[in-house]
Length: 297
Image (cartoon, rainbow, N blue to C red; front, side, top):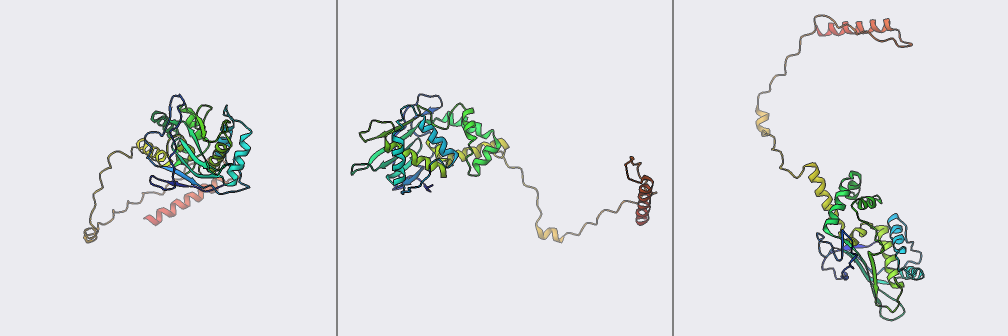
């Protein structure tokens, strides 16, 4: 797996992809989602070659590849070529932003091909439902705030009427190569690089759906704070006394001890227990009560 980094607006290595396609689905929209900080992105840069790079090492990566293979227009013959390209270091200048990933992929011609993978993003109303669904699961919220993205989040998104993994009409690819297959081997290479990214940073899938992890985590913290009432007015501070004043005060004597009882206590009757000599145990308790009364008198 390859480690990638986040970047913000102004990063010279970042490339801005085009807008996402229109999926014509409720709760989804084309282009970056509102509420996300402009310019937040994940820069993959030039992906180094790794002949033995394994794709699908984690649940998220396998789920992404499964969703990719289920696309109606995919030509399965291009996927092995794309996997080889991804392993050979042919993917350059790769970057992920809200709703899209773009890169240059070297092929047979001297100039690299421009490739873009677009994923339909959730609109603001869709994200609100998703965050409400996740916020209703305390364990899931805690996992996200701890930097983990459990696979069970898929069920939370489904409860909001959406799908975190792209469906047949939610993922579109484009490449300026002459190959008419969808995806071509260059686009497939970028898809495999995204799978490798999900092995190390599954939060990238949230970015492809329109929200950077910082925006998602901030929204979950706000919801948790509102639910616990921590956003309300702070309680008044307790009245305090300066330490020097408290030290100078005359100590207050402790309260007088209570007078001892007039007679020793009587042990309560004990239930019969197999193997226990109740008369001997009662006599022992009576002697202890008598001795305690003598010490207090």
